Image 1 (spheres, helix red, strand yellow):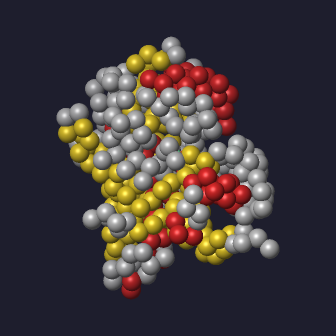
Image 2: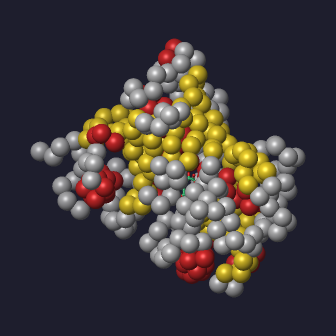
Length: 350
Ligand code: NQM
């Protein structure tokens, strides 16, 4: 009989993933990754023999452990698993699964809950940056129910307030990794930016689309996007990104639903049903910069007000404040939900 592993499945924001305590997984990264691929059912477009949901947004893993750093409660390592390809990448962060980390840490007894609300300081290992998650813990237990709706998720749930620190240059080492606010890459004007997620921002019209299409209608741009991000990845110091999940590419167009900008995001080649959290924070950061692609297309709110990043299934409101050429503050509200807690049985071999 195969050995089971303790695992909690959670929806974090608009993504879904398997959450583990680090102590429940092999310490050796190669052994761990092999196991996680078998848990998810990768490689297989349907992930039929695993718990993955046949999409990058549902093929995600969060690994949590207590932190030994002063002022930090837990360490969160995010792994993006491939669906068709047997890849496991720690090169990007995930602000959506992040929404489940505080609740998971309380559920597993890593953090003691307050009587009404709990704040958990989380080190995001992938980017070596800190996020604070604040959420309801009525009576000392996580309260998942509430009245907050987020686009892309049916119904409402309890809000989880995420505040970010030091997200600038998360993977590239600099907010503007090419050193420029605007470059011409592969014949297209782009802004390459990283405030938590490496993103190539381009005007939808420069790629011959409106930016308001359904995700399925944009799949045809796959080859064009790949050639753009391969060239941009090199300029951003990410090297050969042909098998990497970053940089993402976000096509921007003027807002049409009361937000600041309309977006369609490739992660890195499939079109996102909404937009990633740190992806949205990063795009919002670019919009605030004079000369950046999208700055002139955006309808910017009053300073300090949330910026509505429109996406295919609604809108994600993010808060970003710049101080000169650096980021002073960034935050977002998400929800999360425990879906099941139990033992997962990976298949025997890849
Ligand atoms: O940008 C998708 C998601 C993400 C990542 C992706 C994310 C983020 O929607 O912080 O959350 O860009 O691959 O979960």
